[in-house]
Length: 236
Image (cartoon, rainbow, N blue to C red):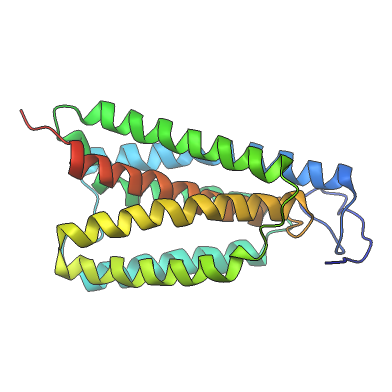
């Protein structure tokens, strides 16, 4: 796809036009990696606070918890998109990652309740890091165009999303394993897809690029942790 020539915003948050030079694309990719690394700090902080306080949106009514979660999440998405070309967008993104850390705390607390919980968390973290490293390398060096995956990944995401919501009430172990396995595969592919869009100039704002990759990493980690907890959790 051809893009119009453009120039970067002097504040460095994103482009004013369409296509980017190779140097500008590398800058967006580099800033995406830096902001992605920074986003781990509020995520860990939110998860730690959530575990310590026993935070859970779903402790009372699962339906209301889901409504609140989606409302807050989409509120952040709208605000981040609105302010993506300013420092406010960065602050909103970091606030969102703190919220997602809180949401992760229930799963973390459950896994840490196993005698081998700490090792399971580290294994999930290492697995996520390895997946990211592989996908980032492929996105950077491969000459193959992965843009055609977008439609199929979205369809796969919707299937997993609906199944995951249904399983909040169904509580079927087999469905949990199936959803988590598919989620790891789909969101791993999303990492490749989103990073290649940055490399090729399809995504020209590092705030929104970071948001996309963060969500994929988050889901890979959470679902790996779910699988490890179900299949490898040990009680005292």
